Image (cartoon, rainbow, N blue to C red; front, side):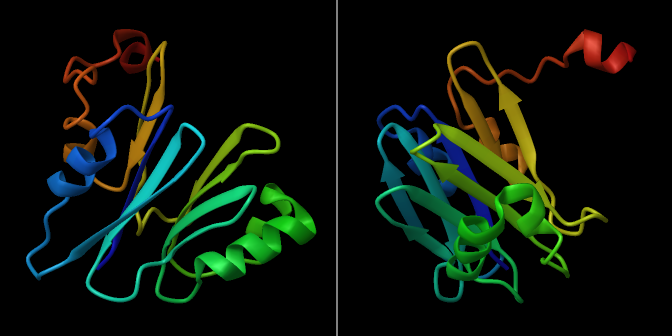
Amino acid sequence: MSRIAGIVPARDGDLDRMLAAMRAEVPVTRHARTLGTSALGVTTWREPNLIVSDELLVAVDSQLWTAAQVAALYREHGFVQALTHVDGDFAISLFDRGTSTLWLARDRFGVKPLYYSAGRQRFAFASQPRALLAVPDVTTRPNRGFVAR
């Protein structure tokens, strides 16, 4: 099982704390990449599904799709249209430095979960809630407005 996490903008140690919080029952390795002030990472027991190029930083949790395949689809179709070509269970994070845009997606049935915390200063996401709680300014208090809706 692999898991993904990321934070925009990243501060020293935030991503490392998030990845460390996503412990698995099997031994895993942690892999992190940065592009500008954005940081994405994966924890995995197999080859990391994480790439960085001059403009893109992509992390994928999927047994069928690689980060390189997702990046190629994004370059050809854009993110929304690229997802029409992706089947199976997946969680994807893609940061495009050229447009300063972070894209997130998960499979339609939520087999691969994806959680997020949107603060005033930054945006954090992870495939496990405990990774978000490793970020110092993420709180366990629910968003009352969201809960009320």
